[in-house]
Length: 111
Image (cartoon, rainbow, N blue to C red):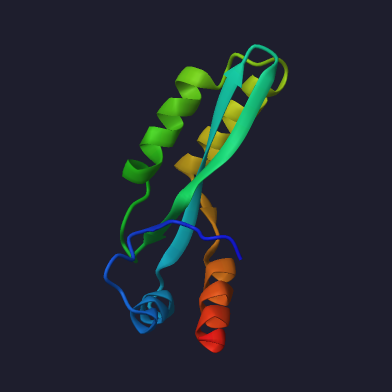
C-alpha cells in the first residue's frame, strides 16, 4: 500500500482515529486542475480529516484557487475539469472515509 499523507491526524493513535470515524469524522480529498496548452492534469490533495461540525471551504479554497488560475488553459479538458474540481471541492471534496477506514483496519490487523 502506498503511503498517504493525512492532514489532521497528527498525534492521534489508531484508536483515536477509529473513535473519530465513529463519531462522524470524514476523510476527504480535494482535487485541482492545472493546464499547459493542450495538456491538462487533474490531481488530488493529501487526505484531510474533517471532524463533525468542521467546514471544508477553508481547506478547499487553495485547490479552488489553483484550478481557477491554472486550470482553464488546456483544450478541451481544462474548462471541463476546472469546473468539475471546483464544484466537487465546494461541495465538500471527495469522501474517502470508507477506503481510509478499511486501510486503518488492515494496518491494525497486520500489526
